[in-house]
Length: 112
Image 1: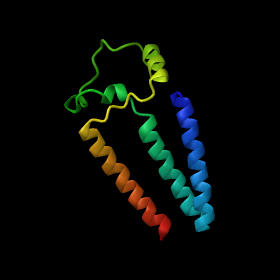
Image 2: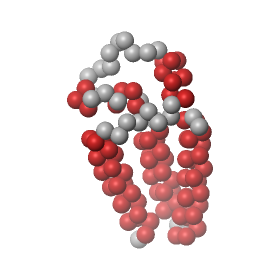
Image 3: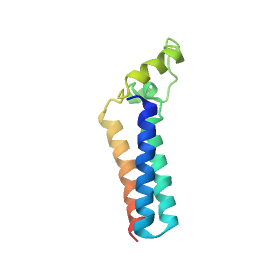
């Protein structure tokens, strides 16, 4: 399953969650907030340049070296190896904090 297929499945799942949220809460605003949060969450996981972030975190603010593979080779590699995401502790802490806070705020809004 490539990135395109994962994106399609994620968007279909998000559509189902938006419909359920809209029906249960009877609020278009809450359904729209669910859609917005879901799109940002999906984009945060599927769209980043993981090759850039797979370096040591102290190197994130410096440009990538010029000896990097061509864009076509990198795209072909990414299509076959979807889970190039390496769970470094700092990255996981940052993502958990951001997504946890977002999910908390979304839940407080939807459940009010």
